[in-house]
Length: 306
Image (cartoon, rainbow, N blue to C red; front, side, top):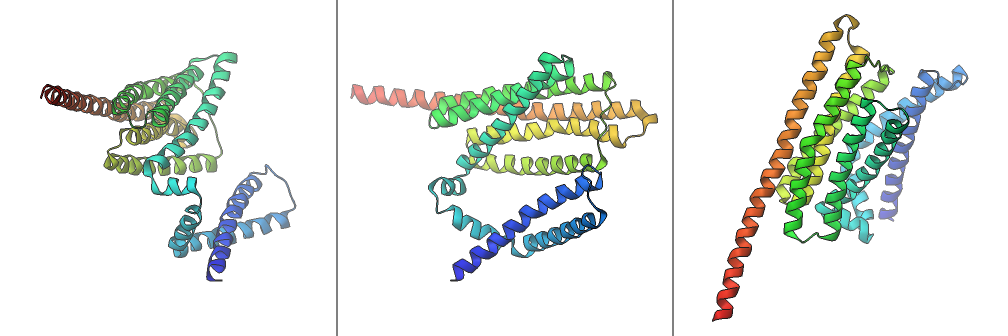
């Protein structure tokens, strides 16, 4: 009986979170008159959004442990979801698979623009998403096919490091092309603020996950987390350009462009550091592995002679 009550409350919380997201999206559309309804209904939706949002925040603050524990208990009943909860490496690979699919969609999107409306902006973004796709795809393939082959794992770690070294250069070229061509991207301010909030959240999460992955000493997990971190870092360049386009002073256009280039330069250096550190780690581990194999080989020869 107690378990049924707990599950009922958990369901209520999840339904509330779900409808909160729907009403928030609906309120934004109504605010910008993208959907037209009677004013009375509009205020009812605003009031409902506020109520659901406050209730959701209250639930997350006061019942977070309960929601987390009960969700885990439910997920542990299934073999697949139990493995996701218990094994950090496997969980990282599953989330990376989702990122890979999104990555593939973005690659197809910009490739289409490159073919039918060619310019260097779309070409640069196509190359950028191709590098991301290759890094994730190679790492996940090795994880699935050769998860216990140390030599292949070390090699793919080095390959990812090399790809990450190229990654920021292409987006930097893309942003340079965008600024140089006087592209003027204007978005609703709420859109820019939401994108900025999501980007900074992903950046904090990326740094946390990358540092956590390093503690596991699993090169595949470290590679996947570093790819995510590098992707978020590079997206900061596009965010800086978007923020300055929408909030910057038109009279300071040259200064704004300089800030975008400076952001690109800093992100390029940081991403290069991540890529180079991965290459160094791979070379170091390969040297250690070669020495261990050599010593073991000599010991086996010695035993056979005896």
